[in-house]
Amino acid sequence: MIVVAELVVALLTGAGVVFAYNHVDKKIDTGAPIEHLKTRKAPLPSGELNILLMGTDSRDCAGCDIDNEAGEGGSDTTILLHIADGRRSAYGISIPRDALVDRPTCKAPDGTSVPAASDVPWNVAYTVGGAACTARQVEAVTGVFVDSYITVNFGGFKDMVDAINGVEVCIPQPVDDSVAHIHFDAGTQKLDGDRALQYVRERHSTANSDLGRMKRQQAFIASMIKKVMSANTLTRPDRLYRFASSLAGSLQASPDLASAGKLVQLAASLRHTDLGHIKFVTVPTTDFPIGDPNWGRLQLAPAAQELWKKVRDDEPLGKLGKGAVTGKNPNGGKATAFENGLCA
Image (cartoon, rainbow, N blue to C red; front, side):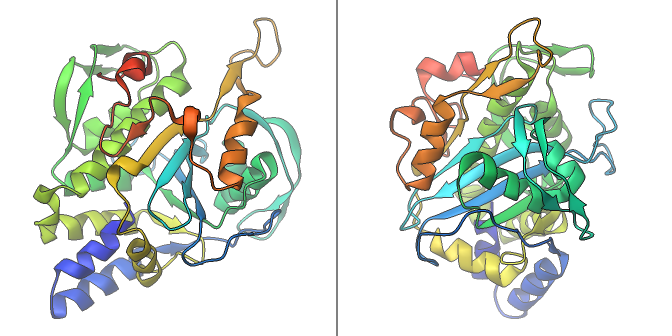
């Protein structure tokens, strides 16, 4: 999605370039710097890069209370995006919001200290300390250096979908969620912003609500990337401009990315990345046994350590990427699509 900043500037001409650039730039909110626990080993700006992407669960935007919940200001969606050395491939790793981890000490946006805590849900770090605290938690849990972070709220997500005239998804079987009153017919369909938010937020129709929802989120993001990069969007500067404006208006970024110029610079370094080389996977987790006080939550499986090592060593996913969702194939491999709640 970041590449849109570059596309807007490239496609608009004359005074339009200046207007678009200034409009997008003024909308971007600057977040707190990351207090790193790890050190960066790879040279920048052309080397490997790790960006933490978060969707916040605030319901204070119009139509964002689709699940009849107030939200607690946590990170509803967390994806660690690893961009490989040379910037020609990338993979995003979804981390469940209910996975229990040990949170390190960190600073809240107002500068107050947030104490460390053990066995707490992943998304609480954002609630108590914001995006920078979550980035520090990633470094503590994974050993991966986090270069930057970006957060987007529900309202911005809806507006981005509408800006590109909706996103097509394939729903393998009907969804009838009587708790959140969300209903979808089976089949391929184009979703507008409101329906898209329902699709990625719905969590009562799958056996494991968080894991099923993450798979749908991955597939939808991949479909949106594919739509943005399609001829129907690239040849429509008006759509690109609205998309970038919607993204910027709901975006908070770490200081190193919090400007249109910095986003454009990053986008330029990614311009040779093929959609088929952008993959999405989920960190391996296991359930707590029935009777355990933490039953209903998730714990990171031992295989997660192998995945974090891939990121630290800037290695491709290999077998860990089997059936992964990609920009070219938003539903993943045929062998895993249905179990992920997606179309084959």
